[in-house]
Length: 283
Image (cartoon, rainbow, N blue to C red):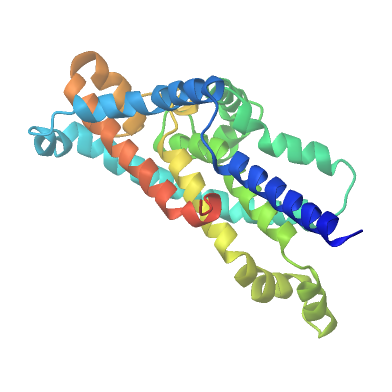
């Protein structure tokens, strides 16, 4: 190939490179831009409307009223307790799915993630069938230990943990799969038991994944509605969490409903801000 051909080849390569870069960074075509903007407006407009219609002047009085404060306190307490329950039983479950080979592991993983797509009301009915006074397990809890979960604060924690724990399990399992298992193997070859290796080696390595999963589980528990109202009811001061209080206030006091909705919105934004390094990449 002569020098002119080589130059043409290089020039063509550069031109193709410029076209490719221009195609990536140039303006979006109209058939894609219009529905994209409509989709953005569809998602953002309700939130903007909530901010516009918010009773900012009366917000302090609304948020400090006894009913709202009870719902807020109960929501924070139950969401934190549900997250603690999810951590205690969810982290070992995630380790089992990520590290242990056993028959039917795919089915077990599907069952663990089922509450993510299961309608919350269906989850509440399932909890009633399992843990209600006449439930499969609930009748024995009532007869042997005198424990009744439905329509109690403990029932709120159970319902929230049921719908929130899959978020923790998925996050921790993904972190475990990304962690080199040879660190655990090295610890066991040095004389540590499997549990000691998990506690001293694995847990520090997957701590960021556990923290992210716990935050997601806490936020999901805080916003749970369907399973809670079905399994625990809506009793002020005992089972009425903030989402239930929003639903009730919307019928009698719309301004209080907006105020509570803004609190939940602020929590959601805080969760996204805390997880931005995990979910978002630089443009």
